[in-house]
Image 1: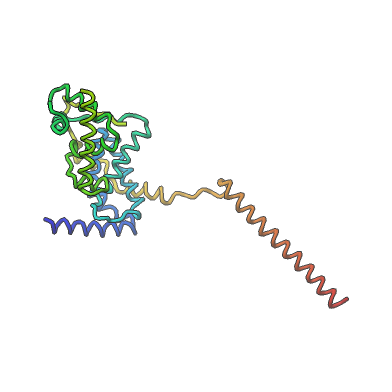
Image 2: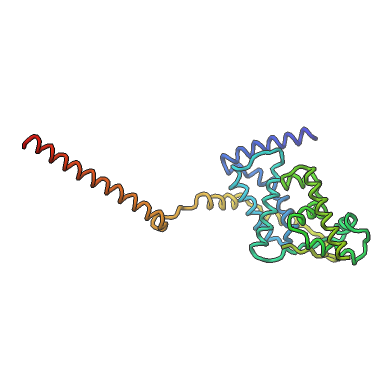
Amino acid sequence: MKEQASKIKVTEKHLIEAAKLNPARFAPIYDFYYKQIFIFIFKKVRDEELTADITSRVFLKALLNLSKYEDRGFPFSSWLYRIAANEVNMHYRKINKKQEVELNENDLRTLMDEVSHSNSDEQLELVINGLNQLPLEQMDLIDMRFFEKRSFREIGEITGTTEGNAKIKVYRALDKLKKIILSKS
Amino acid sequence: MREYKLNKDKKDTLPSDEVINKHKSFSDLRASYDDVVKRPREPLYKNRKLFLFLLLVGLTIWMMYEYAEDKNDNDLDNTEEVINP
């Protein structure tokens, strides 16, 4: 399994290097990552046309900046996810509109187990209010960990830090959320 | 800004592969890429600053050339005077 993963990584590396010289060679990378980036964006914007539009912008940006991409040991997908997250945030800043994120009750209950002692509906409201008061960067971290169910390693890859650092950042965000909830309850 | 809301009724549905593939088009991406990369450059006369700068450089070169020409003519006259006083 590990061998296969490293083989894929080597092939990907070759494809990226080839695409740097000839943009037509970007096609296999585009085909491979299109679906996962589309779904990543869709979960944030919940609109098919808007998702398609932002996804196109993500791949265009990736292709235009491919020469600046350096392999620092993280998978190429983490670079694409970072561009995608920035594009979504930029879209909402540009249209000056709040990004409404609908949360699944089960996901929210998992988060509540971490930050609250009670599982009442009242507490549920407090958690949502607390989440809305967090800075965008910490919202992103909680999104990735609890709503997108990503591992600390994946979060680290997306945010461009180590697994340990990602863990620290997520727990800091949770601490802040706990403090907000305590101050309100 | 982001605002979280609780979704109690709706199921967490994701677009199908068919829907995703409908939007997937590498040729569109290539066209957009070519559009950005091979975008025609702004014509010189539309860039006022560059136009004035080039005009100034041209005028300076022309004046230096004229000055050098005048100096050459004067030197020739002086030489002729020395040869045929």
